[in-house]
Amino acid sequence: MQINNKGYAIPYVTEGRKVVKVGVQFNIETRTISDWEIESDNA
Image (cartoon, rainbow, N blue to C red; front, side, top):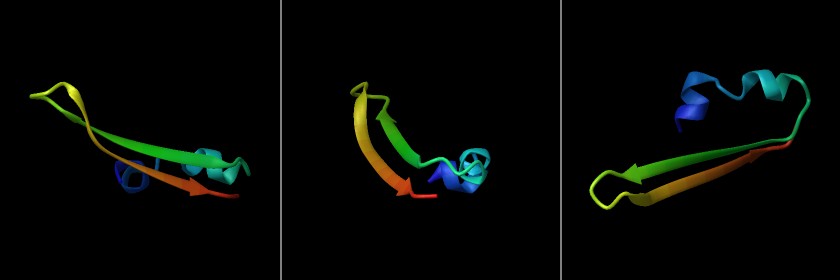
């Protein structure tokens, strides 16, 4: 998941917040969401 690979959530995790990461893949042809992934980290 790009959120993990790029470290986008790190500032929030280090502050002791509960973090919920949502990755969404959009389909260009149908203009809809084709896939998603949800990950929850409890700090």
